[in-house]
Image (cartoon, rainbow over all chains, first blue to last red; front, side, top):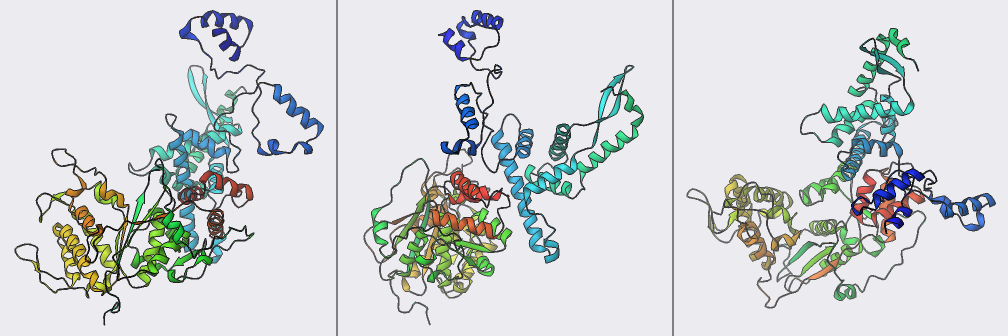
Length: 242
Length: 371
């Protein structure tokens, strides 16, 4: 029974196999579910159009590709992968960063409420504005969200480098993903900490996103502070060795 | 001249909205389906551009041809007829769009048909609107209330009976009966809203006995009902008793034929369920011991003048949207530019919304709010 469980579980190398076999003879230590897959496991493909194509329309290459996939081992698809048309990777990442204690349900509902609040605020402004101004008011909460985060991304970052027993803040170029991460992190920290005790997250978040969309507000200020510090410490730039 | 001079008997009808658990099963009573003789079964045709609005704003003229279409209620009327009673998300939608549009649906049309053909000589009929969560029971009730308001009926609308049996901040022992409890806050808010809806009737209806509030204040026999309501609002301690008096007087006088009365209770199963209120010694209070609930139960009970046997109620099932209604709702949101996501107006977006909401009106509204 332990042996069959081992055959099902992904295995690494011969050495590990024998160790695990020895360990798994003990009933309490049988471990079947691991997140670390072996190299032969392929990523799952989640695409409605790929699977819904009728067999007649496939080219030879695609038919071969599909047949090969039926024989391959494929990793389990995480539950956050959707084929939904409304799925947005940036929103998913932001929701995951807002999540506390694994409570994805709460984080997702907060995100939905934020988008709704954004929409309602913008609709109010739209109805109150004159015809010329109405063309300038953006009512799509997704566009506002993306633009706001783009506006919050810093161009250059600071890194703590140890030199001669002291840590120096050295200006350093940032990768795209680090920039997006910093923008989202600053936004969430700002909304969690600098607000009145009784304001709810969607209210505060929608307010901050709107401010960032118009290039004002505390998160943009923090980005500018980062840029100023980097400018002030330009002399230390040669401490960076990468 | 009295409005209903030709009509005698008990011109009063009930409504209740019953919130069912999704867990328990319910079946449509054959009575209700067979009585809809005049509504031919319209096969929902897939219009490429379905019309989602109609300009007919009088509920009396709504017929099967308007099924699935939205009609708008003028905002002034909304404030007069519905100071309370609309679902909170609908109120937000009205504020955002600047207009109040209700969809005309089959159960509402059925209900309006029954209302239009009520025989006021017969005892009052009770209708029970039931269905799963989010299917549109409260809005159907509001549709019927709008119809009655347009036709000058008197409306007794309790927006949510659940509010009277839980989360009560102040519970006073009743001045009238030592066994019962008073709820001054809920009673006074309800009286204020009742006054807003029924201003024009308050001076015409006269109280038929003398009520003594305390050593210094009393209402004489023959004074208008408006005075009782004023007393309830100004002296919050007596608000519950004022509510009880209003209910008693209306019950007695509606058989005289001066006015038509509509009693609409939303969440009526709260009157017979459990309360979450406790006495000082932490023992639970039963619903009968709340004066408001006690008076309301007497109102809803079938012991009015003029009939001897128990009338069972007429159940009306409210279900999820059918494809035509879903399409209409979708078009309505598109017209108001509520669906801002780029993929939302596409066919796949629509199919996905249909699947995610399962054509449930409440769920669809919540999904469209964040798209």
